[in-house]
Image (cartoon, rainbow, N blue to C red):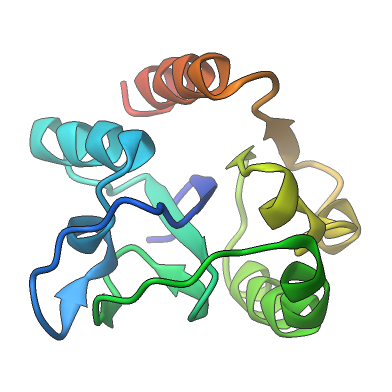
Length: 149
């Protein structure tokens, strides 16, 4: 069964140095990932897919195993990575049919997915988190509460 909802988030500067081959959701330790981990302990992600835009790896599924790193996304890097990121998201969308996609990306990461709405079926609703980080976190938590109930 395919998931109904997709959330796209950026990697976080704050990471746990847990060694090699660690699931992305465990390695990243920013506020969004703390919220996602809290939700994952409450309920399984059976209706939700999570994609992470990483400054090092491009697009990751939350279960992908990765190693600790320290790289930062900037506008020019996002532009360079955009074709690879859009291709991976496009391939992912081709085999999944979502009702809603929620996007919580900072300014630099957003550059890498400009034009995403052109890849999505018209029946799919795209919601962008807006405002400062605290406002975006609140919107993310509210959206997760809505779709996971």
